[in-house]
Length: 158
Image (cartoon, rainbow, N blue to C red):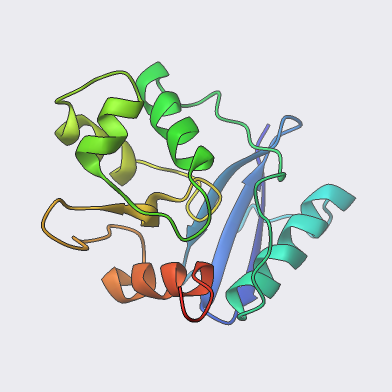
């Protein structure tokens, strides 16, 4: 069973969903969910605290937050694994992600996986760029939010 929680951050409202295995949904939203819970386990509250601090400009290591990727296809899971293995502030092209995910030449399939990513920020789809520049971002908030997320990951002078 997926439980939901919506919370405000410096970059906007976020809807977070979790199962016993980990976080399975993380999206910017402009709506409240009727099925939202008022109670969450300590590990979810810690994840919320770290996300809020990160989005407020205090970079956090978000890699240790447990995720539930069971709803992803095998290829989408490989793409998620590649993205989670990139270091903070690093960017990759769709083609590079395809190669690292074991499907050279499948840049469009990577694009579909990134577009369908249900766990933004924690599966850092904002780190994927078009070969000729930043490219778009289908998550709520536009390419400007993508640029801000990358800015939060990149220390000054780097």
